[in-house]
View 1: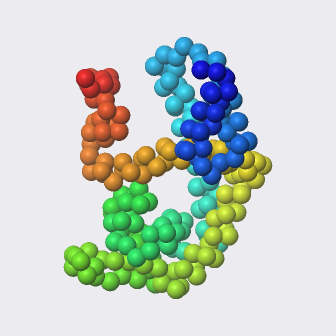
View 2: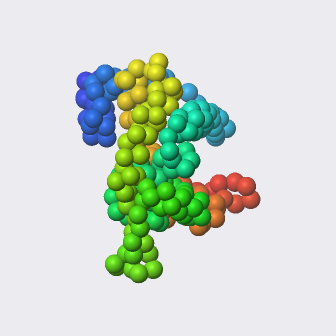
View 3: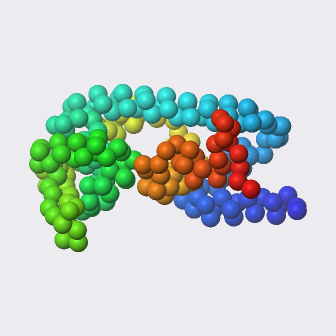
Length: 217
């Protein structure tokens, strides 16, 4: 394959997967993938994966700290309330379990958080006409107003993390991580209430046996 055809093929694939990204971001992505491949052991792979997860976890933890402090400036019951209001604003009228699943929350924790927001009159509930055992919830005008007032504080917490990072870099990170987020968003609802072995097998196609992961034949 000629270099030109290889480049065009790579651009076509990138553009189909990340249509919203610019040519400049494709160039960064392409150059990053052109580094000479090095022999990689399973231990190397584990270390790289662990390093990336550690990096993401520490960034997320720093944001969580800033976000909790920011939410104390609002009238919300707690910092997590922001995510429930924001999630319900995205979903519209929904069942409680839909919101809980959307946020990847535990059922008991989620029901408690929703209960506090109902008590504060930020969320209203009514019986689901298709299932009397379930309740439908939606934002009240008071809840929507509080959410909009909270956005400015939430965005300031995000600014503290990314203030010195270029918009191009932020968008490139989004493009690279978006497929991972989309895959696990689809998988997680079917994984709840399963033990770890079953989760691992469904996600990776491997089975855990005596502490080792083995690929299905």
